[in-house]
Length: 209
Image 1 (cartoon, rainbow, N blue to C red):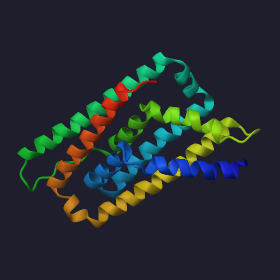
Image 2: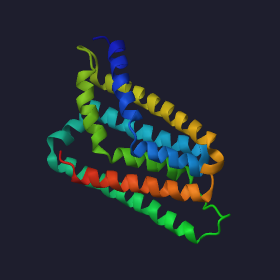
Image 3: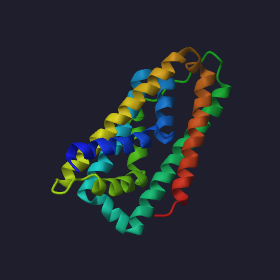
């Protein structure tokens, strides 16, 4: 296997991971609705930063330590689960409060830096990404290649695919922008995203290393 063929093979695997609906897709959609194109791309950049951090960490051996230490894995798992449940609960709470607002008043969305950090923290606190890279890096590192450089390369491919998917989602939201920009649509998106986050957080908390 050459470096080029390894990157191409990994692209197919990473593309499937990216396309599967989950927390990342929900966050990007919600940001696109509440903050527009720039907000969605900031959320996508935060998600990509988290992916890149895990990829490099896995290549450097940090994820292998997590895999060997059940305690370290569980601590990170519970921290990530707690954050996801908190974030989802916050969105559900906001969506219920919006019922009390006049129909013409749309709540002010969160700041750009907070949007970015939400995507970043959500991924950094998800040990499943680290486990994915633990399995992927040995499989897609050709003999004689530098594992750290391959980790950076594989992560970069994953990041590029995630940004492309974010752009596609933003384009789809723009097509239905008039309805999605209403206060009612924002409230429903908060409820859907909040429910997804809480459900995923509970799934993570109940998972086994």
